[in-house]
Image 1 (cartoon, protein in one colour):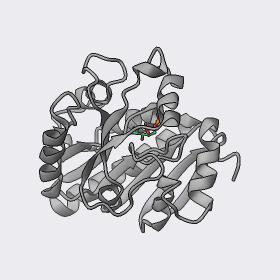
Image 2 (tube, helix red, strand yellow):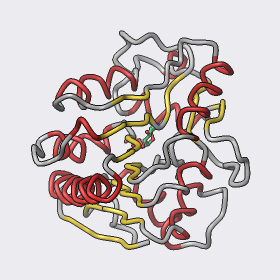
Image 3 (cartoon, protein in one colour):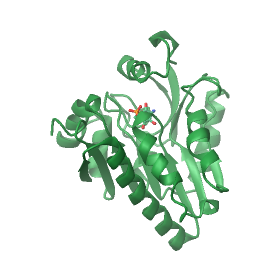
Length: 243
Ligand SMILES: N[C@@H]1[C@@H](O)[C@H](O)[C@@H](COP(=O)(O)O)O[C@@H]1O
């Protein structure tokens, strides 16, 4: 894992999105198409914005997989990650080959199996991920299961995770934040050929220190990224302030 530091979230996002775009184009040149994973949340705003502005990517050769989604949250809710990816990514790129979104309103077990079958046929070239305030990777809160083979899991969300979502302004009160989600598993994320981790903001400083400098442990789920051979972690002054 490599670490790169930038002054602001905007600079961080530009750098992360630019490297991601290069990697997507390399995958298309090599295989004729690229399979990518997109995360959501505040931390991904600038990275996704940079990606969608890159008109040198042939989006008709890109298949996008959705990292995680709340169970039972309607598409119209402002915190819906399906809504986020539709508005910030799918609607902004030209003729995307395919978007494999997680529908958390479907029967969760059936949805999980559908996604599992789909991603099993499409090895991932580039994964874009973030790190939560509790060190989570996707919605794998601590202690995360590093060993489960399933590509997607039905997970419970811990209080710190739910409070982060409230703090970011996606919900009116913590009771409104769903208790469960469908999340890509740690093993599946780690199978990606290349990983771009974008993690700006001072409120992430503790999680960044724990995940990037302490030994790998499932109590700091994103620490597993230290073991990935081609992962670049993009920080800003705030998130890197305890390093
Ligand atoms: N489930 C999302 C992930 O998709 C995201 O990568 C990560 C960081 O989130 P944020 O950008 O809100 O800090 O955790 C969120 O809760």
